[in-house]
Image 1 (cartoon, one colour):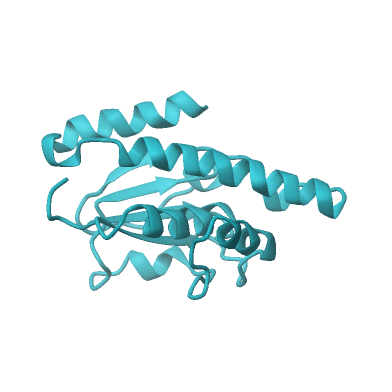
Image 2 (cartoon, rainbow, N blue to C red):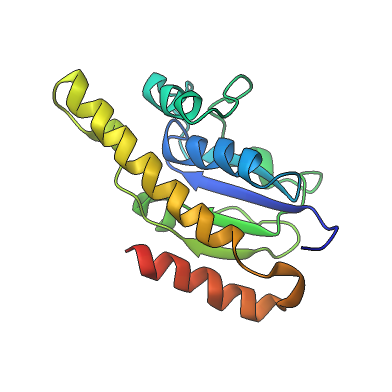
Length: 166
């Protein structure tokens, strides 16, 4: 891998579960080569406790995670992203802000575990399943030879990762 640090923004509507889990996992799994962020179009204002539980269960840091608006990343002085990845179908269909730097975009649709109703055990199982699905996709993402791929080839590879898991 190159010396470049890639910035990745994960988007979801509420920014309370899926995008938060993806942010925490990529920051840990990316070993300094990736700097991950997350945001939502309509942030819930709090991180779902079951998302925190999953992140910590995997041994990843959950201390500084917060639910935030994607508006923070659409300003001229915001960090320029290399990748913007939507993780829910609702956010993928919304009109997004302009992302400085023209990042590669992709959609990785995951079921919303926070929308699962049922017993606490059923909800926990849903979070475990979605967290595992996100981790699997991140493992594929991290296996790409970033230093050898040009931007268009990376876009195709990223699209294929989303299609494989759909």
